[in-house]
Image (tube, rainbow, N blue to C red):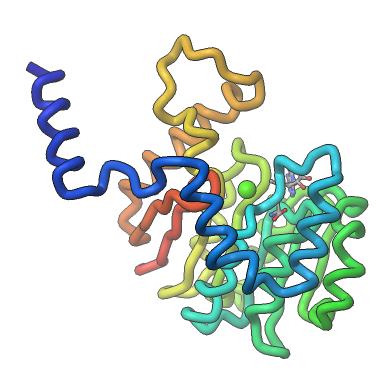
Length: 245
Ligand code: SAM
Ligand code: CA
């Protein structure tokens, strides 16, 4: 019975064409080549190419997601923003380029070395003055910010892209720091597709480890009355949370 209703659900989705827009790698490549790469600012292209040679390049934000973030920030007129998890700075540069000249990004990462790989390109793009980089774990920085009431409701946008086992700890604090109407974007909420993998599926160790945290986050966001959400299949899945109270 359950599977029957599952099947009819599936065919209903197919009928209206939403089962999957991206049916192939070729379609993704088409998006990149048609709409993303030709419009990618030169410093972002250079940063993407340098990052591609780095051993941990799997961590970088994809070019289409960078374009999405850049557009989103402009749409919401973001000015005061935060990024947790910088790596070589692709999403940071996408953000910095979207903000007005007096815009700000509080950017945190435990690793300064990787940030410094991208820094010359951020400088070349003329946006380094918008960035306040803090080396170290993000949670204590958030705790300090929360302690001071003048920071409450002061951020327009936060991009969270670091240690997934802390996402819910970040969420508790960020809901105080982001303004009502502001947006928190959680990255990798489809976690390599593993959110729907059967329990015995062969997953890489780190994918399996963080999977339960991502599942827990997705559930918690879905029922949190303080936010409206929208989970998008961009990159590895990004969930936008708009604070409403
Ligand atoms: N947004 C980046 C980009 O566009 O390339 C990718 C970030 S990468 C997926 C995750 C980053 O989080 C790594 O650079 C890692 O050093 C950093 N990180 C891990 N734990 C952290 C923590 N507790 N606080 C701050 N950053 C952390
Ligand atoms: Ca990510």
